[in-house]
Image 1 (tube, rainbow, N blue to C red):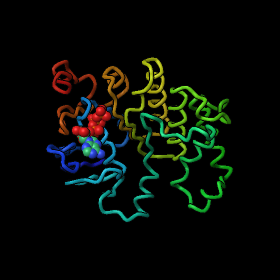
Image 2: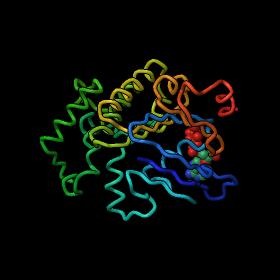
Image 3: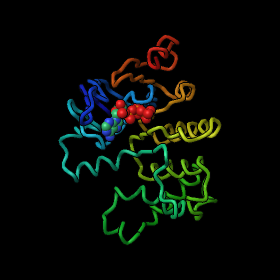
Image 4: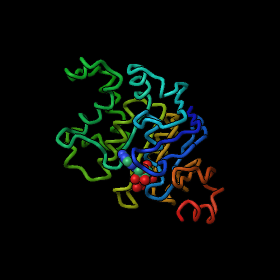
Amino acid sequence: MLDFNNVTVRYDEAEDPAVDGLTMQIAKGEFVCVLGRSGAGKSTFIRTINGLQPLTGGSVTALGYELGGLDQKKLRQLRSEIGMIFQHFSLIPRMTVRQNVYTGRFGKRSSYRNYLGLFTEEEKQLTSYFLEEVGLLPYADRRVERLSGGQKQRVGIARAMVQEPSILLGDEPVASLDPTTSDHIFQLLRQLHEERELTTVINVHDVELAKKYASRIIGLKQGRLVFDGSPDDMSKADLDDIYE
Ligand SMILES: Nc1ncnc2c1ncn2[C@@H]1O[C@H](COP(=O)(O)OP(=O)(O)OP(=O)(O)O)[C@@H](O)[C@H]1O
């Protein structure tokens, strides 16, 4: 499903690489949480999966395609298979909940249809279905700027899901939310992960959330893999090593 082969990313002028020779595979159906200190390379790693982050060395293969070697059309097609949710939601505040969720379909449609805002009956139903799944159907016509942080992230999740992705990525999706809301969001993500048979990779700062919801935990430190195992395998010493 995802294959990382000696992946290295070095930003211009940085002394050390942000991701340093990462080699591993992620299989279909895994729910992976990525842990690490601030600056450990988690966001950079996540962004290599949808081709947002150019590599300095190595290769990433997603769904059988090596990301580095794709033309624009194929890259767009592959990206439409990969949903992403963000820490700061990345929504359009003045648009309604439903309009924001529709934008998740854009990668799957012609620019012409996007420009005219033409949506098929099936796309409308899909949008309503996921708004119901995330508990926001009653808010469908409300502007996003009038929602709470937790509700905004539910919009972000619905937007990713209408894309009908096979892979779901999350870059600190609960870092701006309180602990109870964060737990509810993870519960929802895990539920959708099972229902839609996704492969999920999420960066998270909260170790307890990772232990509760992940099937596999990856620990990064200075861009290197220092832990890779199930939540049950992760000892206090492993955690100390990741965060020291
Ligand atoms: N656009 C950039 N240009 C230069 N250096 C960058 C850039 N983005 C990240 N870095 C550096 O790369 C390293 C890894 O950053 P990254 O954002 O991937 O870490 P992170 O683990 O996601 O951190 P955080 O938890 O704070 O979001 C850091 O040293 C950071 O300063």
